[in-house]
Length: 449
Image (tube, rainbow, N blue to C red):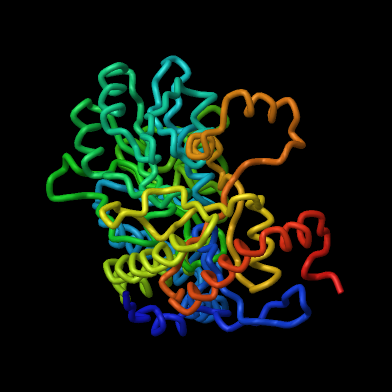
């Protein structure tokens, strides 16, 4: 199997790509980042645009100074850039928050009605951020998964039939942050709309990696609400996005109240501003919106179909290498027919997942993530963790936590980096006893002399 390193030409777009990091041996190597599902490094263009804008930074809205007018224009133009990127239309409004987690919490508060016991349908494969915010306000039920961890559309339809008019929202990840599986969101939208409900897509792992259409020519396939974060798409500075129907959000009282959310206020009367202003209390994160808009411009120049193509090839190459490593188990369907983003979860038999992650960093300068990835119920299913063990863990929280190692690619990663990973995993697998003895009780960090 031969692969051409298409991603090489995009490495120069990334800041810090050639940074050296220390190893436990005292030597230094060029860092390899396979933890992109958690946070991506910034585009150089993003940092350049932020620095270029900063001298003009000012307050937005109502200021008549030139800097204030310029900042306001760029802030509001960024909403248009976001809308066009995800193919939203004029019936949607873009609301800025800190991150995806805040967006879920905000929307759960906006949609809550104390007089009604409405149902939220989510799934067994969700990130905690698309589970916990709903629990204290709604009846929450979970769409099941099959033996390989894929979403069951049959169970979704069964639960839509079961609850019928009581469903407030169906909320589903666009792509799993554990297995990388992409869900068929447009077919799901059609099914959900047939039952008169709305669909929210968690786009945190999907928007940075694949083309997305929020409003289709056929409205049956439209996505009603969308949430995603900038820090997973090459734009730091802490901005998240909530997009939804303006007619719904204009009829929700704001979650946070104060400056910027009102049109008229007296001691005994409040008229809220229209969306999105009514849902953006206080001084906004202007720098975050500048960074997000810049990242979107760069991704759009590359082309999201091209991004997806590059990352699919990287993922296929990595899977082909990892399948040949003894004692290594991959926890997802690796067949080519599976629609996925660039995430691969695995374990090496006999070595704790956190230890594997530590060895990769300390011995080869490779960054990965380990644990449950804020998706403990999904992880319990994938690892076949018994309810008895879960009960023991609740009673004894100091027990070793089960989990996995996760590698995740960005468009800038290379096949040569995957070759280094493959070499490292082979060596760890073949010398398990040596590495367990060396690392299982090690407290030393890479900052220690």
